[in-house]
Length: 589
Image (cartoon, rainbow, N blue to C red; front, side, top):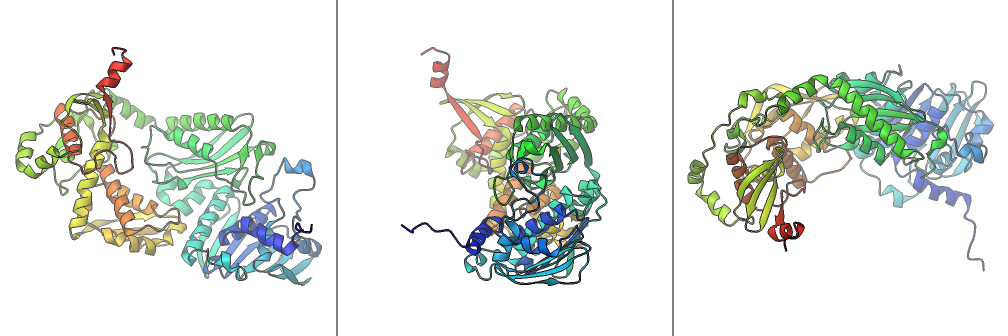
């Protein structure tokens, strides 16, 4: 008896804070969502030390009178839900009534608010209200949160560095700007303005301010709907891609969400336009009946459930494909012209036989295949004579001697050996060979730096600009350094000689994308990612027909690898179908 007791309200609020407020970004998210719900047209967020010391959110919304301001800090007190029926049709970003009491339980809070008639100041210290009195202030709400988690050291110690916490908030504010382009947002970090939008309801203008000119000029506005869903926003043409999913931004009824199936539909729509290692950039706001979406899945409100998920998936896939098709007509005509050439060739010597210092054309879209109707000869005997050490490695290879018998659809090399039929992924196989070759070269040489005649410039969102020092620190071992160039740009003035023969802009963009998810990579991981990206850009692509000599060279290179069975990304380079298995399948045994 007496083992089960009711928790006191302050303890319950602190437990709720662990779900709602995990870090300063969670505080900013809840307070900005409240400001949006209050019909604000201008929202300013001010941070000191990444929000760890202080967070201030100022809006020009409808504000509150004194009674509402006091009640707002009561647990589960809300103006947005009045009965059970409202729970099934949530039309506001906030609704649970947990945010303010949870935040107040783990920090010092000062609230200034006015509805135009009543002006109020509320003070709280770690869950206890210490003051509530009239106080002159403009219409709207100004709330300051200080000393977050100072009295809960177990949570305080799990906070990241000031830069990491700041970057997370910058990224969040950029998403708010995309979700509500009609609102003017400003973010000030340690008295320096990091982001500001005009609130002119122009999504392309917001994309320009956050992602830069290159992304903005390739934006295509979209708007389509069916009976249940209405979608608007912008997609970026596949000329501009990224190395992570981070740039696929999705909103449901203006709410920032993470939803796997929606991202999958977007990626499927871009399939055929970009490689499997790249990801599109898009900003989609999906409007639907509020009864079709359940946003009450988790207190943080990042996750949702949809009632007609398959219907939305099909709509996105169909309309995004059609949009890309209508905006990529010229590229598709060029692709069809290429497919008429049964054996398009590139300069074989640049792919198989040259050292790192030989120029290489890696941007396949710019290659005129008609210039290579006749294959260039590959002198295999001469190379074997010049490299007796490589011949020794081949003898000791983990892969047996193979005889080329053909190629499948310009993608897979077919060969036979004692064990049966071998199917080699031509891109993965060459990628593995190049990976080991570049890895040895990178580890063994001292860098010789090359000055660029024209520096390479990148336009970045502010969340990336704040990571330039971290990028330089971690990229220094491979000879890459950036300089800040204005508010939203960085540039690279010199590069190491091992980058002489790759698409340097694309390679550097991949390195920048590594720093998307607030992860700190070790030097070894950076080197591995760099070499893997270099090897991928340098290797034979799919849909390229090879001569028999070229196919033999691919197999010879693969057999020379220390670990030939998987590419740097973990995909198999070859598979085997044994003769015994073939006999069984054809029912001859």
